[in-house]
Image (cartoon, rainbow, N blue to C red):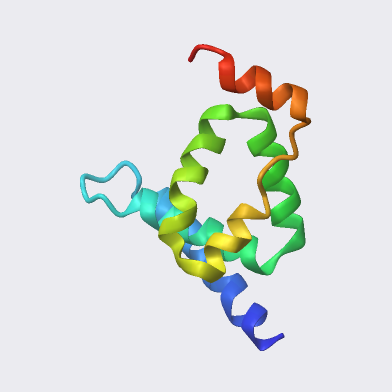
Length: 100
């Protein structure tokens, strides 16, 4: 419980700070936003459901998050893997053979 009480505000602050610093020349915006999103997903079931639906609609974002999953370590990586959209087997076959 204390874990969530400390990490949720930190995650929200990281998201806000990342959104503010994205247009600056320093490359801190995207990593801060990614860290904030990963922490929020690790502590909030609502954020997990939201991210799963967004990943289902956007193949590009899904691909980017799949690349980032192993780089976040075990705890945050598992939380991000749990947000992978559930795709039926037939659609998976179609997706793997479709040209990009």
